[in-house]
Image (tube, rainbow, N blue to C red; front, side, top):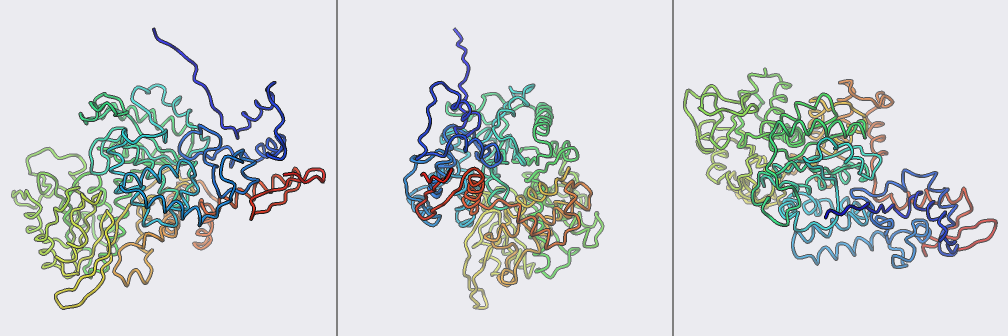
Length: 640
């Protein structure tokens, strides 16, 4: 027998609907005024301030009383307003105390995945504290909340799952996707990150276990570019999986169906894109870790505000590094030769953006394209290799190989004698000492970019690159490495600093600039502008250290520059709808951008200020911040 039931709805105890129902209930009794703000005052406040107090859950629906507001930094009168008074220890903590407690607890975690889970719990239960920690300790915490640790988290996602976060839409929901989207509790969403889990990092098809990527990516949008957490939507599509071991895993939380066909996926995406933009017009849509991302990007890019970070974001951040490396190499663009190991979406996307850069430097498109040699699993990509090339590889297929095929990376390197060696293959260690030494023999300053994630998949590590090029390489990687001290053949000892060509340098600024300009499309010129802005973000000290990218601790400053570049490009392309900022000077535009960025350190003070102003319109509020208490005076009577 099949049982049916009506699910219980649990509104937040801070919502007007809940308070109204409570007030009208025959069982309702007056709340003691010495413990809580009077109900009428609460309703009055909430009617005047719905945006802040009804939208405080960032990435998962509320399931209990003001989950995100159990903040031990909240003064007493804030706790009374939020009805968390008595539910936390009475002392009002400073941020420094909270930080010390959190970092102490984090240090007690013995494994990377335990640290990931601990930080995830903070994000779910005290979102502003989480972002204060990340902003203040970006270099230390970013690897724990995103790459490389998020890769391990995705592999174990169905094992470590604890509570709902983000949104899952399955293939079985087709025809009702709009209805499913209506279940998202936030009325305003400005940006979403979508994956189908079919190519998570270098780990293959992980199905719905890939949800860690949209969650982590959007956390970086917030931490690095100040996009408010409650306007982000992590979204994973369950379209089946080609991973047989997952389908047979009893703990796997996705459907057991085979991966749908590309045609079925595009039909599903058509409905999804319509549903998203109907509920949230102007939403920025970022595609992430699709096995074949080109069809969706080509299909939607001119009709929706969307981009693919694997293609465009990766291309932009690497282009910025190449711009700086080309300057440092002393070799003009027309004399460079680049070997790309990896001819997938990321590799081709990067190569095309560098072609665009070379064209802007005065070369023809054919001349620029001739500088690139792409290598896939079968060897050098040539027009006469005998296999059917994927459509995105055809553009770079060589026709000048004289019928000869080069099957290994070392053969290609010997044939080309490149100035740049770019790795987007996920093949750890494939840039061998022998290959690196050859690069050093042919070039005074060889450009070495092992860009694959996570660290185990990096084509070489920083130490190997430095040692085998005698400290002369211009280096950037996709994964983080530590500085390294090396004594070269001339007996000179120097500390070398690795550059990390991480997409987080550009995608947060692209999202921020697109949202603030209200762009209806993300154009190629906007992506190129993000790379240009990043390439100019180095300080004199960073240039002196030989860095190709800014220090990651300056990421919010860099995101402002990237956002400004994106906004300017949107204005030039006439795809912006925020017309009031078109005449701003660069300095005024930077100030305007900063004023609209979420600042987690200002949230408690902002909340205090809003509640204080609203309460003062009802009675008179005296606040003792040291003790965390508040006296609410009504008709001349002061009562706690």
